[in-house]
Length: 546
Image (cartoon, rainbow, N blue to C red; front, side, top):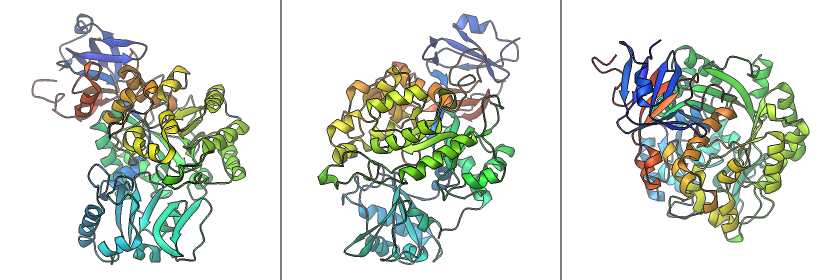
């Protein structure tokens, strides 16, 4: 049997255990062989397509273990307020004003991604500042963490929020001197979102496809949507199923239902949706495998729950628990008993303790692979107990790149240095799957790789140098560990014979670059099961190539 495609003339990262090779052969959507150029050339036949790597690097395609794919896709049409482009209040207001001018009066305007710590004012915008820019449209701008946002007066009125509206459980409606500031945090955001029109199915399918194309262009062949139902309710399930049916869902998806009481997990269960389990079809485009519950907020927004308080000069306090312990433990037990993987948001050490204890009481065992999402500020004892129960950390090293200096300001050096301990997790055998939490942070893999290798923030601050990884370890966390977190490591995450031909061809060999050069790398080709879902230079369709 001859190969369908052979890749020669560069480097192949087989995986952390397999190391490097010279060439790779693919047939029938699987890795046929990997080895020396001479060995792979022997597998070529008259119809074999050839890809000249020309010094580039082939790796197992990236696995995005924690992102919000549908919201990311929907957000592509929102006003971009991320700190890479918006550093002043006036620039944010200019963009919002322009968006409002192009929107019929009365319709909502949405902005995404501002970072109050990066703005020139050093704080959240206020309702009056937003009103001055957008007075005639309901407006909500979301902080980059997704755990809080600022609404203008029209949005507050549409949501029925007044100065005497009580804070819902696990949420905060900020007031100063009895007056609303516009800042809405955690579960209080549900009041605003309930007043917003939900996207229809066609728009959601378009968003899934748009997000998938962007991911494919970055080397991702598999991904997780980490809170299905947060944007469009139960209709999101139908949207994903339609996208898969129409071939518009480009990644292999691990899908996680929103499990908070305002989420859809209970209704989906009542409607007959059941969790994927080992032994079921691993090649299914959609695998509904897990449920997500929030335990706390974000460390950058001062709502992650800690035992010790934030620094007083940053605002003090110990954060926000989303639920009382009895409530969240009951939720974890219910979803565990239904057979779901638990993918539970917990960032601060107090929230991690609440979640970990609840998982232990529910009966967490290694074969269940329950996960603590983010798991940013974890203690040694918590790591030990996680390892004993096979509970996986699913971190976002890119948080150190984008928010590390804010952690330093909010929590002090000791806690900032110890955050997201990638090297420690690897050495202890935890299989930490690198991810982005996009659209919270950039979905591009290059800053994530850079920070895993350097522990350097985007302001060049080094935090926790002892937690640096080699580039091979960083790739392992972004590929095999992600596959493991969704029970797919037997089929994906390495480039060994028999594995799925989910492959990314990077424009440069990152294993031979200095870390500061990672940010200039691009993905040239992404294969999913041997089929190109991204081909930047049309290498697989050139005349005379096939």
